[in-house]
Length: 142
Image 1: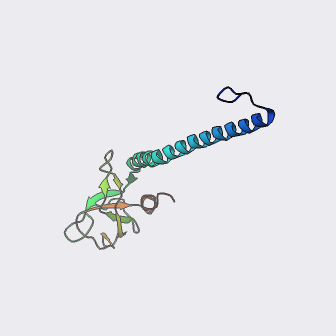
Image 2 (image 1 turned 30 degrees about the vertical axis):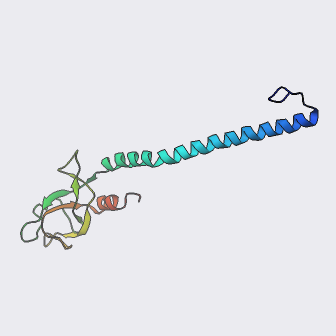
C-alpha cells in the first residue's frame, strides 16, 4: 500500500519503494550537510580558544630580563655568552615575569666583550635568550 492506503501491484511497489528510498537518502544527505556546516562554523572558535590556551602556556625562558644602560650596554650580564640572542618589544609571562617572556623582536646577538647587543635598539628593556630558547620562541613548530 502507498501512503494513501491504495493497493499497489508488484511494479508499483518497486517504484514506490525506490521513490521512498531516494527521499530518505536525500533527507540523510541534508542532515549530513547540516552537521558539516555546523562543524565548519564551530571549528574556528574551538581552534581560537585552543590556540589562546597554548599561547598562554608558551612562555619562553630568558637568561636575563634587564634594561640597556645609557651607554647601550646590557646592565646585567651574569651568565651571558657571545651569541645569545637579544630580544626587544616583548611581554613578560604573567606567571613568571622575572624570567620568562612571550613574543618579541629579535634584535641581534650579545657580544660579551662590549656587553652590547649587535642590533639597532640600545635603550629600554631587553631579554637575553640562549639560541635554543630563541629558536623555540621564533620558530615554535620547529
